[in-house]
Length: 265
Image (tube, rainbow, N blue to C red; front, side, top):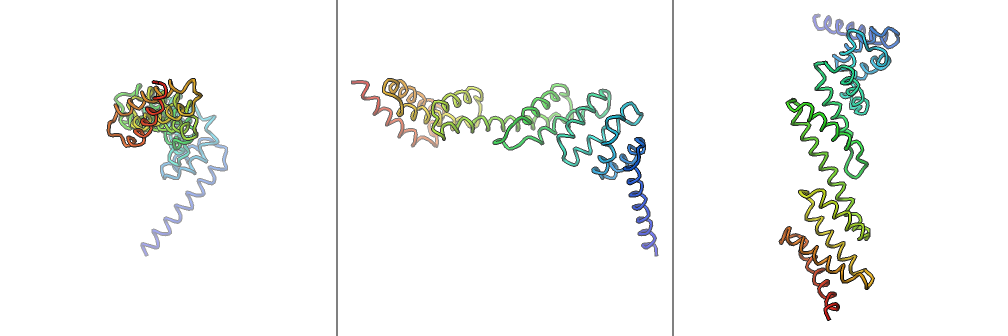
């Protein structure tokens, strides 16, 4: 009997809740939308909260409960993984409520949204660069923040993604036999990322590019380019004498030295 009563009570509550939500959807009363939207948010019904907050978002500022409404609005987008919209709303919230106790969190989550939008390294990295800039701004502004460590870790991962993309792009010139472009791109990469984990590989492909450019050169440029390739071999071996590329590199060096003999006669 008690179970039946509780089930009936629950059904009444659900019906009442649904009825209240439907009324809020249909009404033009902004305060009712905000009030019911807040209830939906507290019940973790974020899509329903969004549906109620969206129509009043552009006109609700200035009301006593506006700050909490805009905060819940941004969080609802974030919790439903709509990161473009969440990022925009968090930034708008931070700009509109600079004294809010939620300012620090909103600033962090607004930046984090761009990090969550960052695609795999092979794709366009516009959102990655935005995320790095926004997270770095957050780090500089809130050095004592509880989100400081996560922000730093995220920036490090994003920068490593950019680094990998730059390296793979440079290496690609070698793969398509554009050795002159490969040399320039790999030189720039090694200079720009001196501590990169891809340095050994970059040094090898730089040497390989120089070698192939040399052996395919017109006679007037061959000697100079062979000597340059020989120098780049030395750079690879100096970096790691036991490099995994040593056999291939040694074979190319032997051919270089053999080709250079014609210029020493």
